[in-house]
Length: 284
Length: 224
Image 1 (cartoon, helix red, strand yellow):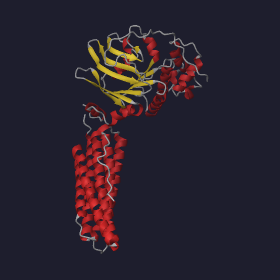
Image 2: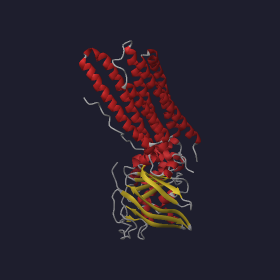
Image 3: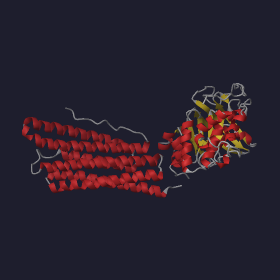
């Protein structure tokens, strides 16, 4: 198979504007950091969902977000590809830098961002179309002009699904098992060759074997893509991630970051007693 | 949200570990008593009892493995189980040293000891005290007490050094004493190792509490 790279439309995005410094290291571009969050606050109407969050997502690492329900971890994840734009009442304050780009800059096209920062959801959501078309769709919306067959095969291979579906590409995606459907959705998200893959509880609707298959896949994909995963399954976070962020809900129901660090440290010797209480299951 | 059942299991695990600790303490005391009083029956009893210590060690180990598999403990819970797993191994080894002393006593048979035993029982008392203190530090999760074990270990090492020199003098003066002096040297060596294992337990207590691996002190060898 010949290597082919996706041709992106010539920059939909103009170079970032100079920005006001919200924190001490603003303006310093760290090549190891793919997403840099400073002073993030997210509200839905009057309700503040996430407050004062700073964190740096490293390139080619798996970063897990853990925490109790309502702690804002999915909200932060959705900020990364501007999914919150789709909720009219949502307001995002603070700064998120995506490599050298101000993600919420007025000159940034959210659609372009979503092809560079892909997303996979909790419930597999393939389109009621063929397996082939599901993956090709991701290419088509991004104006891909190369060889579709090759690109579809490449994405399916990367999602570890090719061998299982290569003889039935024209069959409906809905014939696939839950685990296969989720890998198809991963293939669809991978098709535009994103730099970041966001996964919102990608295995919580799957059986244990399919879950392990997704976890194996994450380990493989992270060689080329930076991955941020929200999970309720702490063992999963411990198994797949390099870094872990623990979020909690405040008394005013706003989510906030408690602790962020190497996964091996968070799960063996967390610094904060709230993290300790949560991961040892003594959280009240 | 308390984890009542898991916490109860952890407490029981620690209780059982302390039970092995008591058995080892008794083994050390009996091994020295048997040696001092030339009570071969008591020495044989120490050898026999060591099988029970060994069996209990593996029981505790199995329980730890089962808890890891079934409860997937994390953070302090994981460190507690890992610490217990190591400590029970240290205790079992201490029991082996006590058994070693009992076997020396049996090997000595009806021979009187080379000299009246003064420093050896003192060393044994210190080593036993270290064992007790290290387990108290475990129960209280007390890292200051755990670090204090290092001072006791220095005293035991100093006693070992002294015994070594004294026995060497005997052997140099009269080579016919070599066999009997060597017996006592082995005993002193076993006691020195017991004290060192107690220090290891204290280090595990520090790990349990802080997550850090700390070397309380370097193992010192007697000067030549």
